[in-house]
Amino acid sequence: MDRRHPLDAVFQRERFAPDFLEIGRSGRVYAREQMIRTGGGEIKAGLPLDGLRIRHLDGATVQVTYNSHVAYGSVVEHARRSSIWTRTDGGWVMRFHQGTPYEP
Image: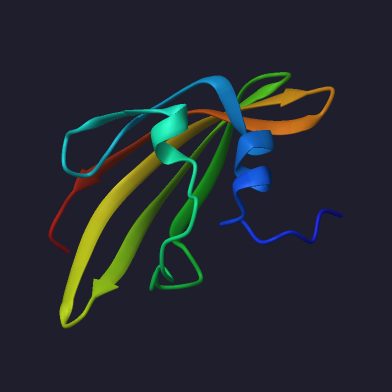
């Protein structure tokens, strides 16, 4: 099992597919290199993930959906999240991720 921290840039390079694309909660579009964290602070997300579901799309592809609740000071932002993951010889890689804001 890989014990590196998910915010580690090497870990992220291995987990984000070369063609990775994200549509953020803001509606902005991010390419893979924009998403590789080279520092940054702690993300204060509520755990466990609310409404976590994994749906098999085919033998090597899944869609992961959940609701996120992230605190930025006294403000909590809520988003419905969806990502597409593909199993490769090197492990699972994320191909696509999207966040859509919502109010609970």
